[in-house]
Length: 430
Image 1 (tube, rainbow, N blue to C red):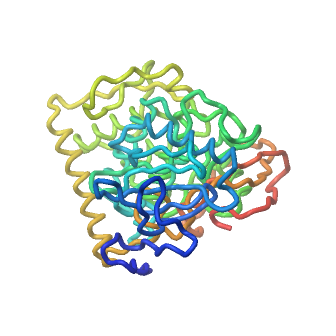
Image 2 (cartoon, rainbow, N blue to C red):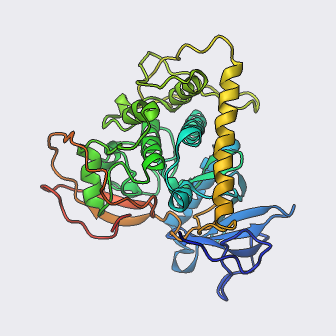
């Protein structure tokens, strides 16, 4: 079992790396305490705010500091974080995207990423797994309700905090209906192995694309492997587009919703809000959700009371099949009790994870405990997408090599080819 190196300064969160001689002492008035991670979009530092609270400071560095495309990425990330529901994400603290070099400051969310937790202690099960499934669905429903699409839902971007799962890294997030952005024409941005089929075909991202990510994440949490295996980006793209997901080992109570979320067609996937409603219902009644049935309109997500909310933005559920609200138990109390119990189980699992490792966890991208994997950089990679072929329903062997849970987000340029094309570059498994 891997034991990460402790921070040189025991007063800082474990795993924070020391600043180098080339690092600045402060950015935007925020004193820097150490390094959290780095990637194509820059370096992520641990800093301290005026009130003494820890913050995550992401900034461009080196030759990229004056890159206009990168500056636009920072501007887009800050704009998305400003709209995102703070209770489910790393809250925006300061927007320095207009500075040179640009920077973005968010709250520091303490806790391991899902990728770290599974790597350290193995797959989740029981109440902890159900709490994760409900929590991530609720977070995505709130993000979609705010008119945003995350576009990079994966284990490395989910922090298991004491208050529940938090989505981090909105570096490639976009408003619903925004097909543009800093990415070049014909390019697909995302992390190989976690990109939904429609994006691999250069179709626009929709909230349903995030729901596909939810299915991948829960499959990974339950089995310790990506439902579509590992390998180079081209092989991952082909399996994602044509093969059935490998869900061997997933609890029957979640197999139905996860299978639906991993539908090749966006229209065949439940809305995140419906996933949340049905999973809450299943937790209260102890009945498995065999299938999330369809209906004409999707429900509003169950959001915390933070003031008046705008209705779903136009096109906010584009590409997502509308679903019915299940019959709730006659009393609402059991639902709240069940949700509280499963959340408590997840927090208990996190405390156990930290205790088993002396409180030390590997380095993470931004807004969490550091991770050894670089933060999610947009790296250009050409993937040759094969000609469409008949869907292969046969599942792969459960003994296949486990897939790494994360890797840098990449700009992928699909093309045409035959069979298993061989691409250049390194994917999460290569």
